[in-house]
Amino acid sequence: MFRFVRALALTVVLCTVTPAAAAELSRARPEEVGLSSARLARITETLKADVERGRIPGAVVVIARRGRVAYAEAVGFRDKTAGAPMSADAIFRIASMTKPMASVATMMLYEDGRLFISDPVSKYIPAIGKMQVGVERIDPMTGKTVLALVPVEREMTVQDLLRHTSGLTSSNRGTTTIHKAYPGSATTVSREVTSAEFMETLGKAPLLFQPGTRWDYGFSTDVLGRVVEVVSGKSLGQFLGERVFQPLKMTDTGFTVPAAKHARIAHAFATDPDTGKPVTIFDATAPAKFECGGGCAVSTAGDYVRFAQMLLNRGTLDGARILSRKTVEYMTADHLGTITGAGDYLPGPGYGFGLGFAVRRETGLATLTGTAGDYNWGGAYGTAFWIDPKEQLVVVSMTQAPGPIRVHYRQLLKTFVLQAIED
Image 1 (tube, rainbow, N blue to C red):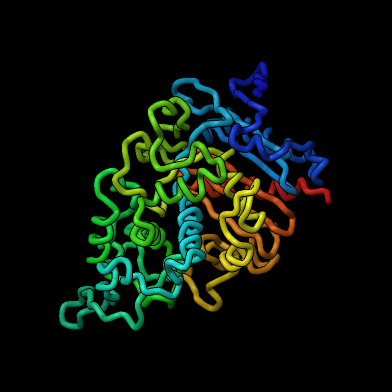
Image 2: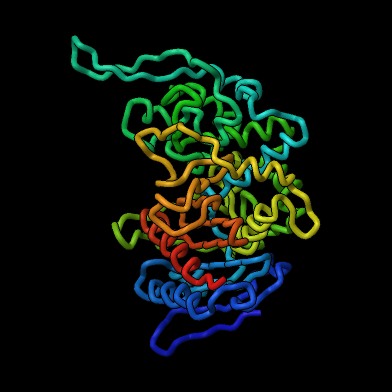
């Protein structure tokens, strides 16, 4: 299944692969699905060169069009320090690419009639219902910033969690007194506290804004994952395993990497190539007490392309129906309207947000080529995916390169894929 190519002048390992979990998606030559082999080769050439330059340790990229895998490459190293080449079945910490999966779980419960997205979150997590909105003011007597708390005008809903309009934030999103009241990431505590304990901690923090009035990227999906647990009576990992991963044959996706698969974990560099600072990623081999819906999952490129293809197919893959067509259409529509971002931060010009994904509102305005209606998300450790329904296109990119460098590769890959479309 693997063909290894080593250029004489390079130490980069390149594998032309059929990812194990993606094998059931039939293969096609790029030209059979309207793509150019020569133009897709730019992806491989660039990634090989960047591995050689020490920009990234390695990567796996899978591109499917019209339901068939037209490009699947593993480049570089799974573990650069050990000299282990990247493999098609390498397991990556996917960070915020966990969020679409937790969102799908929520909408499955919606389809089951077990919750409504209009439900107040406090119905399932009472501690969240006690939160108030923080308002920072300057004390005229002392000139110091003081924090006041005001009641919510309306409670946050499940929809607010799905579209990030809950008022929840995190400490790495700003420097105000409100931001400092939050942890930086659920992944940092996921091996230390339970999801119920984490909700109690969050419930003591102030909200950044009134629910439903602004967009901000915080702990919304971590709370959403807890809602799934309360409603289903199962852990998030157990629910996803039974209802999503097993039906879709996502055999390497979960919240902890079992011992038998430790040798397949992809590793980041020890230090960031731009800043020289140490790189820290959570230990995916340690048992998780808190299977956080916001960023704690692991997966492979092959597994995730099956998840994404299910969405492109409007809820089904290989006879497994995960969601209805109407639910997928609803999730991938813009749910922000005129709502703006906290600090003017949104997924980018031309994009709104659906229920778990950034959604492109129109072909123009965005700083990258694309199609109105395409949707995407990525992870802080270097993974990304996007789906273009009009072009019948699914793209999954996996690397372990935390930091700003990950944005460069998201942009580069989208450019390279779309310039390869011939019809």
